[in-house]
Length: 326
Image 1 (cartoon, rainbow, N blue to C red):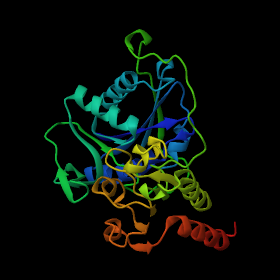
Image 2: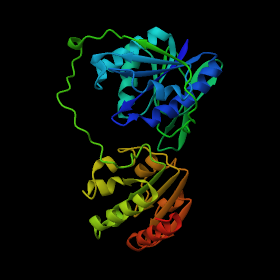
Image 3: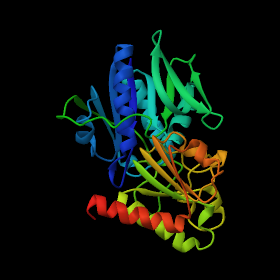
């Protein structure tokens, strides 16, 4: 038996959300009386030493030229062999774009139960229980499994980032014996989309803009971005702002965008539609800025400012620059 965690990597190295899952996996493994295995996939063992510092019992370095670039079928095949290699009964991934699809395909191939987008995990009577947030975060549902293998993708920032320590745990290499001819997807070209922006899913602070920027969208989102820059935050947006063409979809927070859980969420000119609240309602502290004192967002906010974002945002930015010495 073991608890297997897929450690996702991108051009910047190990994806932090995977390490959050690894930290929780250690608790689950201890409760089940088994070991934690961190699976690192690629054409070399890059990332294994970084992962060692976060305390897994075993780092399984799964290497093959076929794994040089992410492809769903190749990575799923490799993880399926890893499940067999270490006798995994629990498989966890971060619920990133890749993590969701890998977990879903792996569960299908293993005929395993699958709980997507879990926000918590625990063990009861020797079995895993995954907690999912449903109905726009109004209900928490426990998911139990009848299958021998249990697969879960975990919503980013559901668990704290573990503290790194000295490298420990065994690094074990594994050849998944994959053939390029068996992989249907082909990578013809790789282009970096890294713009240096703070990722929404990783961000501890997010500043979002909504329909309230309508009188001057370019200036409105410039003010949002300026405050975000001072705070080292990510820039978010409501669906209304994205649909209106004020900002690209990659910034959208909500049911049809990204689900986020930052320490601080500043909503500027966002009314607080249920769709948006479903994506950011788990934020630790919510600050709302809106001209309408009756806007629904104020019911969810911990702090509210009734005012024009075109006046409030510059004032906040100036004050934060002063307080932070920028």
